[in-house]
Image 1 (cartoon, rainbow, N blue to C red):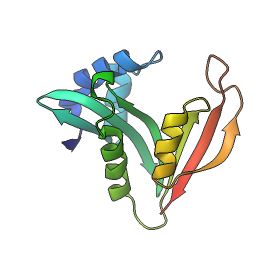
Image 2: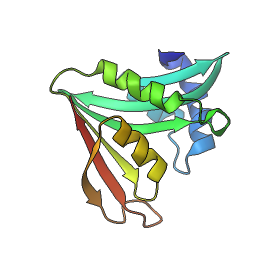
Image 3: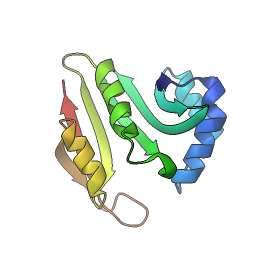
Length: 139
């Protein structure tokens, strides 16, 4: 079930972040994100946080910071359900932006399936020198 995560979920988000990211957000960063009224949606099954979508929104412009699914729950449609939740939250004229690793072809395919298109490239954006593909979607 997709839910809007709250302060009580911060410890679960921290664990998932540490599992999935070399540069994970800590509890303070997650708390500050939530305190600034920016949503984090999560897929929770049997009190287990299976995946998260972390975004910000200002004046109809959304940015996806993180979409992450625990490896043991991948290939079950969780990322698609999280992306669908974001779509439901957008209004006509809204735009969503994201950056994705140039070598992450499966993620790019997911985003394209939701109507995102490439709008730029950030050369050597990641610490390992990998480029970031900029993508956007307009409602």
